[in-house]
Length: 350
Image 1 (tube, rainbow, N blue to C red):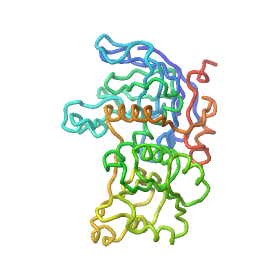
Image 2 (spheres, one colour; image 1 turned 45 degrees about the vertical axis):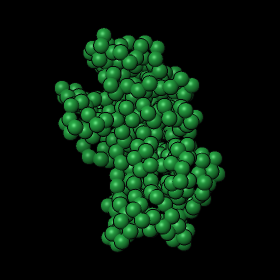
Image 3 (cartoon, rainbow, N blue to C red; image 1 turned 30 degrees about the vertical axis):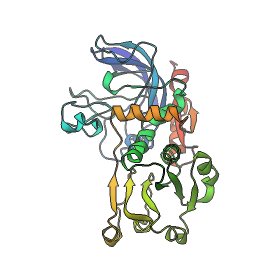
């Protein structure tokens, strides 16, 4: 095993400390990555605070990882030393179940291995990208296209894939009229991607504050939802609505903006259960669906699409010593879309 420097939380809600952790020796199909950047996902905060149930501590978060290959196992064929690569939310799956075989390893029937706060199949706890290096199975490593900034690419490994998957699944394309709820870390990427796909995009937000940003990112329309009349005026408008926020919303009002056969797609985790009237979906054959990330092949497709269309996340770089402050900014929605830790230049030995 090898040692590497990492940022670790010893217990729920604890401050991050620089610690030395162990990484496994390279297996034949492993890739050793020198981490350059690690995005701060809102889910990192939930996991560190144990908001979603019991977690594994000490914890090294981070599943929005970009870096450079520094070594490969003898069976690795897709990567070479010096390649620019990324790693997302999962680092292993069984690879043999019907769900893995269709390319949805993130929903592996044996349970996918999370990049952090998970366990390898041998029981070893996983540690994420808030570290100087990480060892990952080749199948779960993505190539970062040339010309794509490694820092701005990091959030795409989670946020980008989270919104790309439903946009593809529900056919964002010319002639489609879609809405994105929320212009945060997920929503701003969704607007950029949906615009690049050719759809007509309306951004729905409770506040007018981000109107200029939304239009600059590619939204065709911006509607302030704090005025109920504005939503009522959109009745029967959208082919689908992509909800990127975890706020408590009046779901019936959003369902009524859908066309017949329209879909309300949820990728967030509201604290309270949704409530709605059955008539909102039955009478117009509307559906409420969830979308869960995507497998490695789809993630690579997303990265290639973003590179082709010049899409990247809007980011603020933070030093390794500023992660706790950055967590507050993300939790309070004061960060300008995504925070990314400059691992290579700031996570250094004391």
